[in-house]
Length: 305
Ligand SMILES: *[C@@H]1O[C@H](CO)[C@@H](O)[C@H](O)[C@H]1NC(C)=O
Ligand SMILES: [Zn+2]
Image 1 (tube, rainbow, N blue to C red):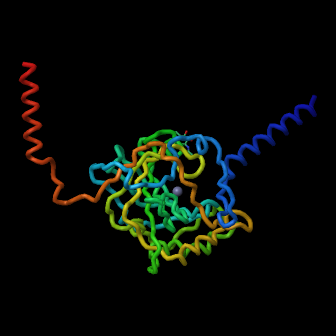
Image 2: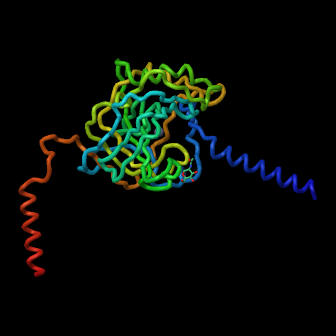
Image 3: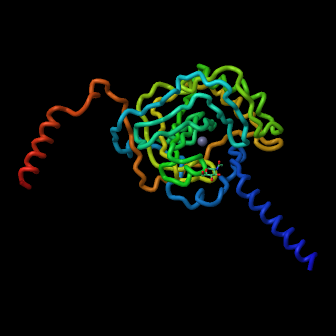
């Protein structure tokens, strides 16, 4: 009897260990070896609003929204941590809260973490870029990222794409400076504090319009909770800088040569292109439209009197 109980318990323990292993252990294929992209399971394989996608300008819809606001992005952030989590290089622990609001967003989002993908996950008109930064924001309605990922409006990710250049990107160099300390396999998941203040705005090109659509996280759980905001303007990076990231180890004796997910089906989702704001057009409705609108209202009201 006792042996049977122990045996059953051992089986249970073993299967639950396997389950955690399956859900936490996922990886990118080695594209140099033509490895097939793995099935990550769950909604990653069955979802219909997955990311990344190809952003085709010619197939997108024109949108006009309130101004997209990035609050406190110019602040000097001290004590920012940088970690190799085996899937990316990630920055977190910003002492000054940064917020994203406006644009397509109906709520305020607080920046939780920033991480990088080499090469880019999104393509624009089928063109891939050497690097993509993801600035992940959580809707303040929800207590944490895990909670937020259960809701369609839970998260926003601002994506910055970098193009190949001969000009080194200074903000990216500030991250590369710490790669030596975090890149080895035995340093996995051990955050290091950045010694110098880091200004997140320096990772961005000028705000010159963006494309937005409803999608998912591009890593497991692949939750379909993300309002994507992909900036139209791209920023320079050198291929030599990208080579530094390719040395990051994800497993023993295996480097993370690339960490971008395959393109997903658009499935007729609207992709909205927002052109840069024209300052002269700001400041309210056209007086002609206003008077026509009021006239219609007067006519409608009089009809009901
Ligand atoms: C997230 O918030 C929920 C609700 O407050 C809480 O139950 C849960 O433990 C939190 N999870 C994490 C990872 O902090
Ligand atoms: Zn990402």
